[in-house]
Amino acid sequence: MINLIEPLKISSASLLANRTRSLLTMLGVIIGVAAVITLVSMGEGAKSYILDQVGSWGVGSNSITINPGKENSHSIEMNLTYADAQALRQKVNNLEYLMAEFVGLGRLSYGKKEYKPGFTLGVSADYPFAYKQGAAEGRFFTHAEDAGRKRLAVIGKTVARNLFGEFSPLGENIKINGISFKVVGVLEEKGTMMTYDMDDMVLIPSTLSELVLGTNKIWEMFITVNNEDQVPQAVQEIKKILIARHRKEDFHIHTQQGMIDIINNILNAMTGIVSAIAAISLLVGGIGIMNIMLVAVTERTREIGIRKAIGAKQRDIFFQFVFESVLITMSGALIGITLGTLAAWGIMTWLKMSAVVAWGAVYMACLVAFLVGTFFGVYPAMRASKLDPVEALRFEA
Amino acid sequence: MGKVEVNALRGINLTMEKGEFVSIMGPSGCGKSTLMHIVGCLDRPTAGHVHLDEVDIDELDDNSLAEIRNKKVGFVFQTFNLLPKLNAIENVELPLIYAGVGFDVRRKKAQELLEIVGLKDRMFHKPSELSGGQSQRVAIARSLANDPSIILADEPTGNLDSKSGDEIIHLFMDLNTKGITLIIVTHDEEIANHSKRIVRLKDGLVVADSAVTQMTEAQRHNGNHPA
Image (cartoon, rainbow over all chains, first blue to last red):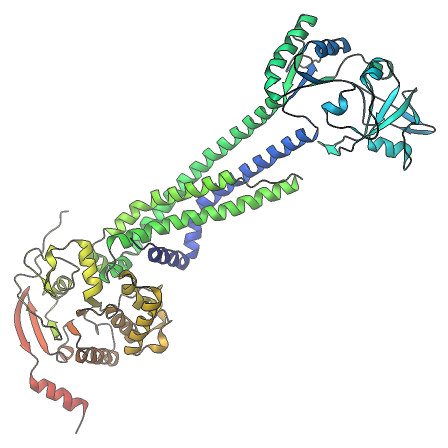
């Protein structure tokens, strides 16, 4: 077995003896690797942030969202109705929950207190199940109560705090746009999403939307099916039913998988571009390393001659120089990974997102650095190992 | 430009015994260095044979020659040829590294050798922190690292002042009395007179091969120990 430890020690000693030059030689690799690691880590961080946000809204992979208006059209025709929702509820197979949402402006009052919540929504009784946000206190209204146009309201924590302070709002009567409602529940806390306070919200039965909010057009329909495999089929059924009712496709359908696919596509394209730039940077860095190594071989001809005179074999010299080259690229990669991770962490912290260490990119960077170091180190090392000892000893630097 | 073959040596027949102390003398370009390179297995003769410890070295490949240089030959050069980035003890350890000797053993051996050449207190100095004489001592210690059959010294005092040169020559003489075979290439008669045999080369041929005379020995003794 060839002892590789000694050449490795010799190589690292020689790199340490020329610290400035070693560092400058590494720079190409450092920059390339740091750039990739930063951007990939940020991309991964952004991805998990977006997925977290989507997930925190209770949207699962078995969900389908229907919005009025053609996809990508500028003017949105509001033309989805309560009747459309009822039709889907009856006809779509494997349907789990259906939540029709009407959006309007609400002005609340309780006694002399007035408050304008962020959202006032008319929703179906499936709301707590579809969005996985039930009542923390009290209860939600039922389908029967929705169909029966009962004046019941469920309010968010922020609204409760503003109107009732420390007191329980349950059973109290409030007015929404002048119409009296009884508070039957307070929603579980959701926190903020994309800077919106999701607890600053009042929910009323969808059937009262026209009366209270002045709209009978659905802003959004949210449907879940029993499991995610049934999503594509359900999408086809929804399209068929709605087109049959409207005689045109004046709505658009999103699935969570579709959104995730889009996000992934964007991030993968970005990673691809970054990797291509990094590959160029590593190639240039590698050529730089080869150049420096060739200079080093010439400069150290005498050293090579001395080593050979006292018994270094060709392979000893070969490994010494290859290892120098590999050590340069590997150290460069490690420095780059460290800097890149720190940069990503810094930027993501500044953006109030959490950075993710992109382990795949880290392993890839190490592997590529190793290969670049080996590839560009072999030629100079061959030159060094083939030097004639007599001529090498005669060499004057 | 093609390479021109220069025959530096043209038919030399020399035998050296174990324990000998031989000087090779001659004017510049007489083939002294070439002879030393061939005896030291740095180069192969274009024709003829070189036997070292019964091994015919002109039939060996580069790696086997490297192994012989490592184990059987010790070089001492005019310009010392120490590696400037390594300290004294690391320079002495180099041949042991290439011989595959582990750290503990080789460090101990290198320490012993540096003590022998009188550099016990300079072990961790870099060559740039050593005088010429001290550097040459390190080189001699290095040449002894693998207990070689032969030490080849090419103008070992050429870059030294006369006092350091004297010390180096006496170090060689001490080593020879301990049984080490020495060949010194020099053009300095006085140094050659300290050896036991002088081989004179001219234009690639041996022109004289004689033992150093008793008289010279006696004179030297008288010079060192005045009555």
